[in-house]
Length: 371
Ligand code: NAD
Picture 1 (cartoon, helix red, strand yellow):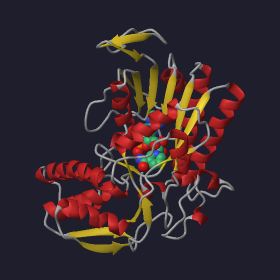
Picture 2: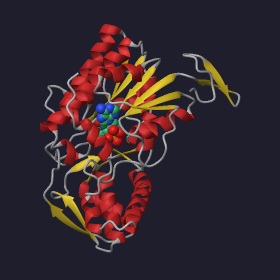
Picture 3: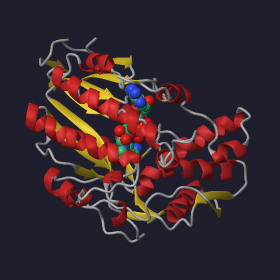
Picture 4: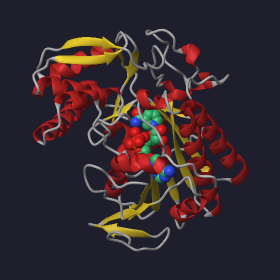
């Protein structure tokens, strides 16, 4: 049901004296990290929001007007999800951090190709006006990212294509699909390339977590269990930039409202090494740590966002400092770790991230779907 307004496609309604848009918006992947925050962001702006995922939100209830549990690898699910919808934010994906995407190529390419091919075609069938697709910095060629002091990546350098993983190839294919659906069918598509989004309420254990969440968890265990030791994968000199979730939702909304149809970077352009990131987090936690280097997938050696186009086209760029975003994220993850320790989970299990967080989603994601 429409929340506080008319359940009529395209109509406006009045909230506390302000005319608000009543557009009917779909967020796929609404049970996940960015999708959950995006639903809340859109609700604050007066949109009627349908969320779709294979699982419910993990840490706080979704603010969506309607939350449907659907497997978007299936054509009928995509038709149901996009029915009577004007704008789609397409976030659903079988994904995770480097530990996950470097080891599940067939599963990722299979599942995400099905999700995106069906979502786009169903959106077109159902007369959706706009669709924003969430791509990734993983589309950029591996050979441009071999140095920790990497040249920031401009959107144009994605071609000639040579992404590192199946995850990146699938993103690139769906980018092309979005461009062709716009050119051939008039579906207004937008394409964002995220550079490492982080924040509270994201995956922090179980194998799909990304570097900022994993390091916050390890530092929290080192602090609360008084071990003082934090393991990092490789020599820690690999570099990335990290963008806080509130900037991400803001940027997504600005891009959706813009008339820019080509892929656009969305991230911070302050690059730091994984070792520096671990030290920053331990400073926030207020502890001294000993870093232990262990084997593990590291991804490309260096990666940073070139934000020239973002600044020029949107007249905006991410505003929130890494320290500010990490403080909020660390506080939330420390509270999660404390709770698990109180429940009797061992510090070793927590430090290794072996505590399964999203079994239900992973179970759904495993079986092959042939449609
Ligand atoms: P997430 O894993 O938290 O959310 C993705 C959601 O998609 C999950 O809740 C999952 O259950 C859902 N999903 C998976 N398979 C599905 C299916 N068959 N049907 C319906 N839902 C399904 O990830 P996130 O960090 O919120 O990422 C959102 C989007 O942004 C993804 O497309 C991701 O590839 C992209 N992205 C994220 C980052 C980042 O740093 N977080 C970076 C680059 C790109």
